[in-house]
Length: 122
Ligand SMILES: [Zn+2]
Image (cartoon, rainbow, N blue to C red; front, side, top):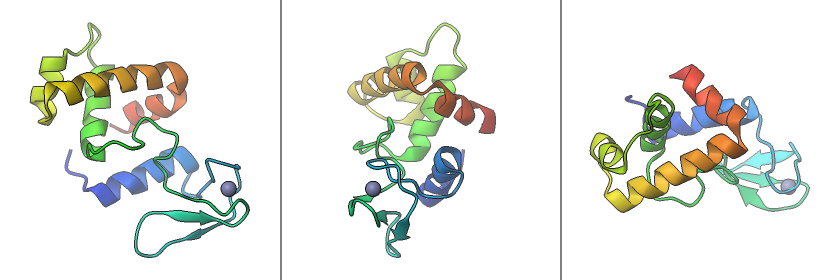
């Protein structure tokens, strides 16, 4: 997987929004894009957001491409991917790997559609 962070965000915006920003707080699609970063300002509730708000990727320091790879590994390992294996495959420490696996499993339970679409693309 050789997507850079910007391409990962574009992909995530496509998967989650079909390319049209939608406010995670009020559901409005009236948004103004900030030019400098991949964030949007909601014209209805006046908050700003990015596509990762409300997803398993929110507020983590792990790059999106590592998350995408981790999701694929979790989905494609019928017996479950081990913390050690994930840590090695994507180059994070074991605490981070354990955290990622937990969040991915939660997301599979909470947002199966979103996760399934990642699997389809990859
Ligand atoms: Zn809003």
